[in-house]
Length: 557
Image (cartoon, rainbow, N blue to C red; front, side, top):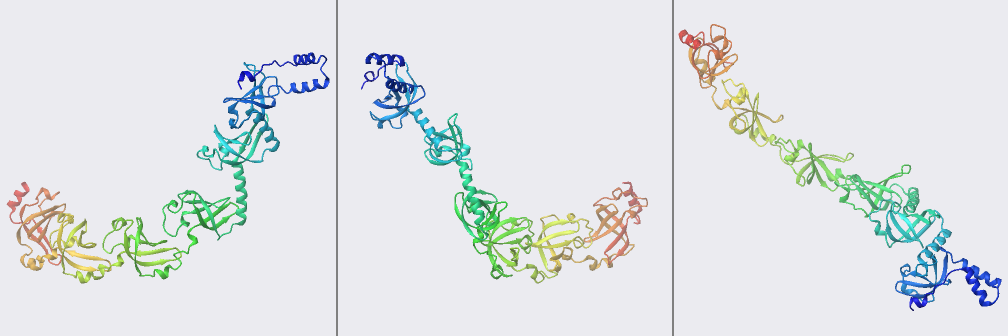
C-alpha cells in the first residue's frame, strides 16, 4: 500500500475532537465517553510507550497505528529481523515526537525495548546478583553484554589477569556479577573477574582444607619462570621448583613443561598460613641415589658425558640424575691443566674411575687420569740415572731450565749443572725457550715427581782430566775475557776452564769498574794466585803478571 494512501494527517487537539464528537451526537459528550476519550488522549505524550498495530511493512520503515489520529513510522533497522514482521502484529513503541516535518508521529521500537528491558532488569536483579548474557560488541574500555539491554563489562573486569584481545569474547556467553546499578542514568556495570575471584577463593579454602603432604594431584601449568613453574591446583597455585623437576640436569623448566599443560605433581610441603604449596615432579619416582653405592662402588670404571665445565673441574653425567665431578687435578697424570676446557668439551664422552661416593651429599668424585697407568710409577725404569735424553725447553727461571722430555714429564736442569767451569748467572745466557737440547738424567724422585738433568755431564770434567796437574799457583798463563761482572772478570784459559780475575787484582790502584781496565774478548797474560780442585775454582791476577809494560799500556788504553 502506498504511503500516501495509508498516512492521514490530523491535528491533536482535545477541544476540537470533543467539539466534533458533540456536533456529531447533537448533544454534549456523555460522561463515560469523555472519560474514555481523556484516558486515550493522555497516553499520547512524548516519551510514553504505546501499543501499536503494524499497518504496513516497507524495506526501510514499519508503519504502525499507535491509536493516535496519525500513524507513526519505525525504522526497519530497529528490528532484529524485519522480514519476520507481519501486518497486524502488535508491538510496543516509544513516542519520540508527536509530529515531524511530514505530519507523522515518530516512533522507536529500540528505545521502547530498552525501557521495558531496563524495567524488567531492575525489578528482577540487584547489585551483587549473578547474571548471564552474550557479549554483543566491543566498545571503548570494555565490552557490551546483552541482558535484555546492553550492560557494560569493563576490560579490567573481564578476567583475573589482563586479557589479550578482548574482541575474542564477542559472541560468547559470559557469567558476571552486577557491580553497580545507576537508575538515574539507566546504566549497569558488571564484572566477570569479581565472580572468578570469589569462586577461586572458595576453591582455595577448600583446597587448603583438603590437601596433604605426600599426595599426588593433577594441575595445569599456569606460568613458567627461570626458577620453576607455577601449577594451578584449582583455587591456588603451587610452586614446582626447577630443582624438583628432574633427578637429572635441566637448564630451564621449559625443557619439561609448557603453559597450559596438565601434569601430575607430588605435594612436598603446605604452609596454610602463608598459603604456599611446594610441589615436586621428580619425587614421583625413586631417587637414583638410593642404591648408588651398590651401583658405583669405589674403583669402578665407567663412561659418562661431560655436561658442565667449571674452573675447578668438569661434571660428568653417568646416568639421568647422577653426575660426578672430575677435579682438574684428576684429569691428567703428566699434563699441566690450567683449564678443564683444555682436556674436555661439553658433550664429550669420557671414561672415568669412581674415586668416592657420598650418598648423603649426593656427590661422586671421578678421575680421568686413573683410567690409565701413572707414568711416574715406571719413571725409574724408563729413565734411570745416566740416561741421555732430548727435550724442548719449556721454561727458564733464575735457578734453572725446565725441559719437557715427553708430554707431561719435565726435568729440571739446575744452573749448577749447565757447565763444569763457566760461571752462569742466568740460564738465558746459554739457552733459549723452545730450544731442543740434550741432557743426562742425574736423579729420579717418583714420589715428588721430579727429574734432575745435567748438560755438563755430557762432557768429561776438565778438572778430573788434569787441570790440577796442568796448572799451579804462580804460573803465568794466557786467557780470554769471557764475562765482566761488578766484582771482576772471568777469563777462559781453555775450553771448560775459567778463572776469576777479581777487581782487586786488576791494577795496583783502586778500580771502580772492571770495564775501565779490561773488555770482553780481550786476551791477557795473568798469574794463577789460587787453585781449589774440590770447588773447581781458579784465582787470577793481572797486576801480578810479570809483563808490567804491557799492563801499563792496557791501563793507559
